[in-house]
Length: 110
Image (cartoon, rainbow, N blue to C red; front, side, top):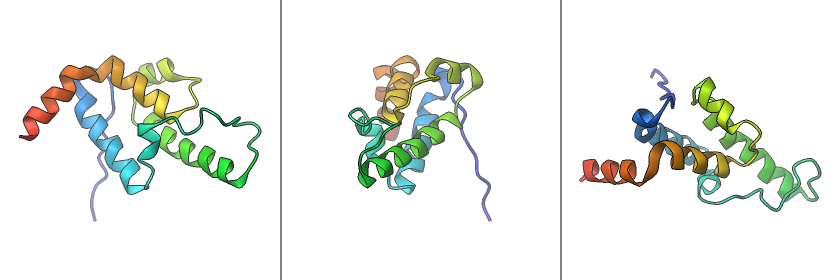
């Protein structure tokens, strides 16, 4: 048996590990595309028109929940009301990750 260890995003210091955790979670769920593009931008979540739209809304909610369960209450306040998992991830990456953290991560990988 293994112990599930969740990295909680509290600020820039945790961003690289948190981002890696989120990437792994969405890959395991086969939902990575929800971090790369806004899949729900053209869908009315209160009035989906097709089964495909219902599926997309549900999958977005799953990725959104992965994110919300792994951020602090203070950071959660910053993204409350944002429906798109992509937009939440993008906002958190811009504020807490930035290009410097991305470069540092890849340098460490070399």
